[in-house]
Image (cartoon, rainbow, N blue to C red):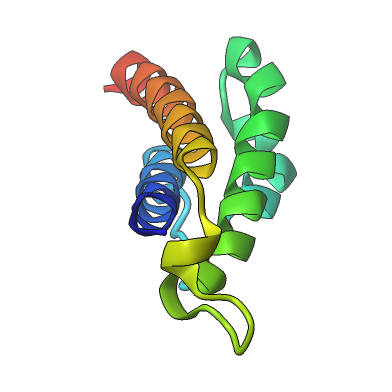
Length: 108
């Protein structure tokens, strides 16, 4: 659960950095994927095919955030999340970070 939560935080902050680099003030909520899609024209043409996947990862991890943090009456995070969940979160965070680094590096 800690890995899922921290992957979500990395994705959120990286995507907000990407929005900032594009000249947008990021919102105060956790899932900024819809903004990436709505503002696709601000990003280089070669990056646009990745925006759908970035938005999808952001949405999925935002949904997991609350469960990973707080659980629920019948959901104990440390018991429910598996190594496979952690591996997926790490892979998704790595993908997002690579795209964001590429974008920020190309505009710096």
